[in-house]
Image (tube, rainbow over all chains, first blue to last red; front, side, top):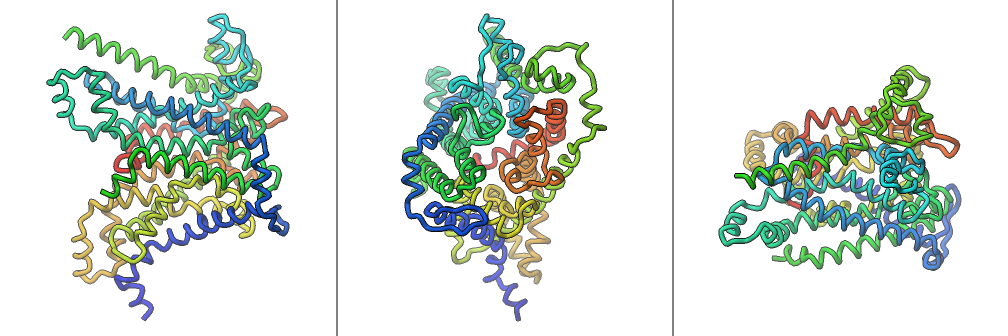
Length: 298
Length: 277
């Protein structure tokens, strides 16, 4: 009886998707709702929580360190967008050129950095951007007569190290995304344009860029997400969550500091909800502007 | 002809320079693993190649010294293998449910899959942390494996792949009298095999390098994974560079070897989302 029920074609699909439903409810919906609930409470691990209304949010709005973290995350995200979209796109087009030698070799070499964990990559960059005269970057600057720079002690120089790390790790991956997008553009388009006398630059701006749009939107979406949620990179570069004057503090870093380091879970939950709102608003705006929704209605 | 050659040379030179820049950190960490830790404290990571100061001491220490490196290494290996096998099987099953049947609530459920891909996992860290604490799962690998067992990106990829498999196969199985589950296990799973490689690599890489969530859950040194173990070598009271650098160097090797052997699958796995997104 039960066997017949479970084996019927009506019930089987639900059995197949059941693991997803369970994971979704237990590990996404429940935490999301409880995060929302916690943001209106004062919560300390192992103690009774109590409701405090919107106190966490009002406190958050006057929290200058929180705004510092938001600013850092936003600047980091913008810098990664400005660097990690146009350059990988251009490099993908160049490497895709028929005149290119050793293409496969370069493609794999550029991918190597993505294989390292943030812990290892962060350690390497922390030491490369060390403040000693003999560390890699300073020794190169020394050749040009520049005094050793204390990279991780300053806002701008700290961000240079942070963005260099991101660029190193993701350039090759984004390039691969664009290369797989380029495969979908038929060669005829370029041939036809050449016959009409279009220059290489015109072909790039009029054919490649518009036709790569789906790939660009994908890379943009994941980069916005990754940029706003960045934390471990900063943790590794500054060897912990406490950078001088919070120059490396990010939104998730602040969430971690309040929630785990200070056991102030309700306040940290409010930080998380604000992060969720920021991510959703930016990504939905971006998708609306790029016409993703319109396309799906067609 | 002439301009073509010049263009080739310029392109090649340009990418060679870029390639060198990208490989510099690898070179630096490789030579640093042959240098004494004090050297790093004094000079940082650099490109100085000085044979007289270099030795295999760090490697000897790595393989024979008193430390937990290989405990962490094998923990990572174990966790990665278990996580990949479980995640792939569960995600493939779910993807099959989505692609082979029409059922009530299907669209809504699939929107939930997409939703997971859009919500930053980081905002769930704290509620998941309290949930894990309340369930008594702190310090266990289940706490790391379970939340990711139905991976949205993996489900999405498998569903895409299953679209290419003819529905007649399922119908033929039914005619032969096989039940719904036997059809999946005996007929569909075998033809899905090629798609498993790319997803095994993608999930394996994520799992091998995963840091934040395991770092929050695991507090027992004997259960640390490699990234957590390496991170603990950096302390506010001084850093154990001898082991850190050689350990970092050594941790890249297995994944690099895998990459060189199965490059195509790495690339397929990494770009899976972007192709028909």
